[in-house]
Length: 113
Image (cartoon, rainbow, N blue to C red; front, top):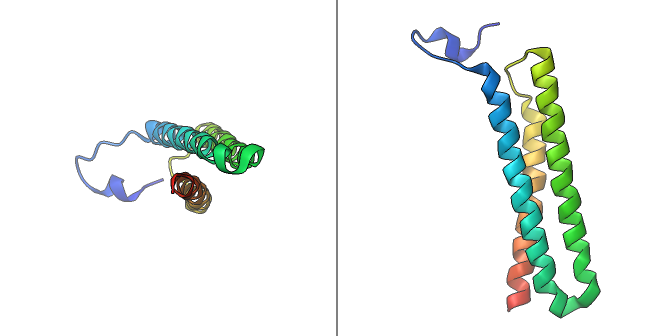
């Protein structure tokens, strides 16, 4: 199967590492999301008490879902020998991770006011 980068002469491709780099990037995103959720819970604990655990648990579950989805996608890519990436699921996962991270940041900023 030819891709756009195959058409250029002298282009070196390493299709096996693309999926691995993507999986590692999603793992870093999940770590950042989990950390922001914990910081939001810590900042909100003084304001709302025990209810501050809700964003921490939601963020932790979202981070776990991101890691599981990334690992599952990596296994599918490598098992099928594909090098192209499914754009729709990546975009949806990126939107969810961004929105949850923004919500955690907003909670941190609101708690400090």
